Image 1: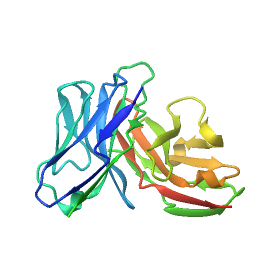
Image 2: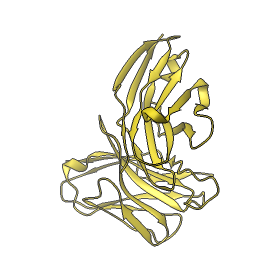
Image 3: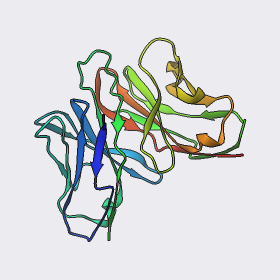
Length: 117
Length: 114
């Protein structure tokens, strides 16, 4: 199993450009989420999805869009990048609610480092 | 909403020293608690978790954590650290009956010197 796969691993953007960070998982997990990691601030939840067709906002959703058309994929879109979005982005997945002994344990991808100039 | 505080931002130890990293959470209901570790240049991996039962939880690589409900704490411990434990450690919490949002603390950077 590949687990959670993120692409690209590195990206440099100019202010105002748009891009999509891709995330795919092959564990048939219902739940997927995006976090950003910044020094001294830990990981902050951007958006999450409890299943195909369902998304919701996390702690810091502004400036980001998501969609969940399939169970496997959960792309994160930056419509107009800003320097404040320079960060490392992690995608994570877990078994959905209602699953026996589900505790919400997350499985993380390797991260995407984004720099906005 | 739940929140997590990790008061130790940077800890420096020599090999064989004992380790305790603090984690306090804020939430009025039943919770699941986690410690994740991020080795340099790698993604986060689960170290251990608590969801019910014995409040003393043992994880991988000799780590353990104790859930003290009255103190809203879930401190991470290891009796004798190794150089390979150099990493960043994150405490996280979600609500037991609604696990949608896993909230992380700000992390503790551990450096272990030989």
